[in-house]
Length: 202
Image (cartoon, rainbow, N blue to C red; front, top):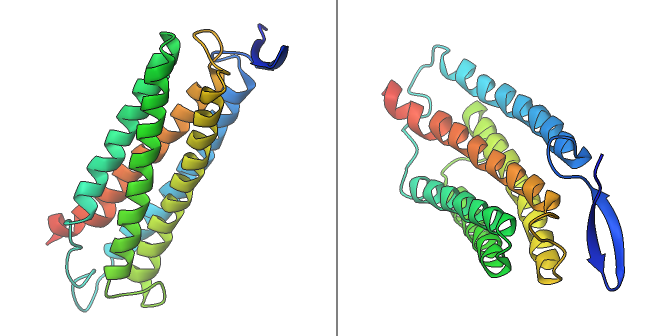
């Protein structure tokens, strides 16, 4: 197994290997599989309850897309920015690497802010009933994953400023990018299930 190294001052410290043989690679893949199962169960719970007979429409009216739709675009753009940053490190373009990772982080922060505004505007709460409970649980779990991804990206930005990465030493950026793309993919599933299916059933 070929070890990659990062430079700290005059020392070189092993940080794992690049590619499918890297421990970090398998760690993030197994973590993603576990988290995907969690969201699968949560979304199944929503779909199952939505399919049951109700005295009135469930939800009472389709959720507004005025914030959720633009926020979805923002999160997708953040994924593109992170991809640009990862691609740049492979091409040994440190400036573009920093721009991509920083833009992805900024867009992720905007997503969190818009999501909080949307939560505050909802006429129901976590304790309002099954719909409110599932809505806030599902979007809340996703928010937690976004925040975890933002912490990863922040660390990668700091290490990038310290010139820890180059075209042969970038396993950490690849792992962080994979996680961020997973977070975006989960949101697409959440957006379709919570925001679009009520319009389709209506």
